Structures are given as C-alpha cells and as structure tokens.
Length: 252
Image (cartoon, rainbow, N blue to C red):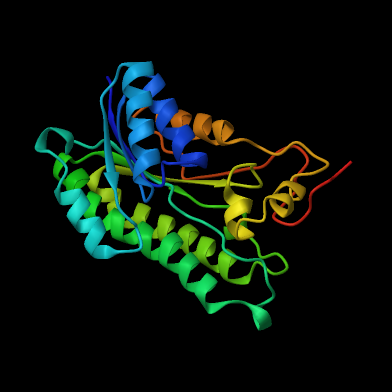
C-alpha cells in the first residue's frame, strides 16, 4: 500500500535523497524547505521521473508561525500523512565553546531542536487521528557522544536523541512508531554549511576515507518503514567502515 510521506529539509542532502527514495517506490511525497526554487525543481523532477504526486511547502522550520501556516495549508486529501521524516538540521561553525558564535548556536538550536518540535507538534495530531503513523527523526552520532569543538551541535543532537525517546513513550498508546536514524559522517552539503561556505575546508573533511552518502541514509530510512506493523526500529546508529565513533576516523 502506497503512503504519504512528509520530509523536512528536502532541498538537498539527506532530505532530497529520502524524498526521491520514497517517490521511486511509488509513494507520494510532501517536501519542505527554505529554498523555493530548489523545492519546485524537486517537485517537478519527482512528478516527471517517478510519476507520483509531489507537494512542495516552502517555509523555515525555525519559525513556528511559518510551520503552522504551512501545515494548515496542506489540502485535505494530503493530510492522511503516514510518515514524517524530521530531517531539517544543520551544523554551523566548529569552534571551541570559549570562541563560539552565539549566532551559530541559535541557528543550530532553533533548527535542530525547536524546528523538529514545531513540525512534530503540527503533524502528530494528524497521526493520532488515524491511530497510526511513523515519525523518523534524523539524529547523529554527535547525539551519542561529544567531540572537540562540537559542543552546541552535539548538544542539539543529544536533544534529538532524548526527544525521540520521549516521543516513543508518549505516543506508544496511539500506535505511532518513532525511530531515530543517527548517521556518522556523510558527504553532503553539511560541511559546506558548517564551514560557512568554505568548500575547500568542507572537502578536506572527507579526505582519506570513504564517507557515507545521502543515498545510503535514504535506504535506511526507507527500510525502517517497511517492517511488519508490530516491529519498530527505535534507534539505528550507522557510520562508514572507516569511522568508529563521532571523532575517530581512519584516514589513509
């Protein structure tokens, strides 16, 4: 049975790959992001290439008002959402706490924590009304341990870890599955954003080993939704073979 899947942060990286994976399997997708041009291009690509329905919602998850307005604007025949993928997230800066930028801190907390909460708050009532559904939160190995200069980014992903566990407890009685996928290093736009557009520094972060790709994570997200109804992957931590944890990578 084909499903309706909402993916946040779908204009690049994990989110784009996840949306495409679900569409390629015949599911209709609601994709969100801040970059309207990219959003429209992806909607068109999905509709033309995979011949499934796609709906784009342009908003910033950091704004509760924008989230509420966007979710309320979803047509009634799209509100039977089966899967919510809370993917929107970022790292901004890589500085020790004593020299960190409060602007970077606000951006990470507002996106990774509050944005996830705003979207979840808007979608959970729809899932509860159906007495079923699946929420997938994209966490990180940074939510399992802290690495040098990771401070606030790690804190934000530790929050995702805790929120996911809390969600599963609170939504258990409503038949809603809750899963966290916690990836290690993957080569996407992530490091370009973290290093404020410094593409060379971002490229260097992946030198000497084979990192994961966005498509790798999309496969795992999709797999977690294909299990029998009585099974739920609660927490899945994944890295490339070269990575042992958040800060130890074997480079050749």
